[in-house]
Length: 236
Image 1 (cartoon, rainbow, N blue to C red):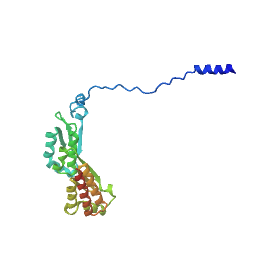
Image 2: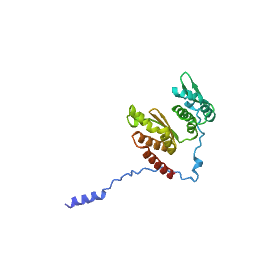
Image 3: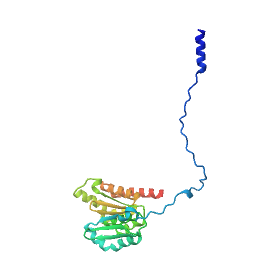
Image 4: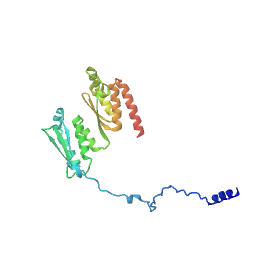
């Protein structure tokens, strides 16, 4: 009995606990150099030119519907001048295809000039005046939005005609009021509606137009628009 006890005691003295490896990840060494002026370490790249890469070969084509063919001929000089002189692009009208073609030239420096010129010509083709469409070239926060009356409510026949009449109003009064309150431009082309303006103003005008299509009274829509316009003006 004593021998067994001494053997166990001897074995207990020789027992060594296994070592566990720490699984902590080594942190990468950080550069503690002086970073008081980080602007000096930023790389400086030259502005990208529009003629670089595939942009120089890209051609934007805007089809012209028959009812805009005559206005395009009349105002062609007003459309041609800002695209060529200000944006340094090449533009031409192809009578056989009845479409306007825009292409970047050798002097084009702005890579976004091609898209802005396309939006400008497209706005004129949709029915906007040249002076209103020119704002797309001068300002960066203007957009175009188009939708159909039937997207809001499926109307046909006389019901569709009455909805268009509610949007226009007597002598265009309703449309002009929406434009003045929301600072937008609206074109009613049959059942198509085109809106030109900033993102927030487009949403306000579209909400008013949708309410008129759904049958709301114009006086109620005017009040809602003025409330939204005053609220947005106070935020600014």
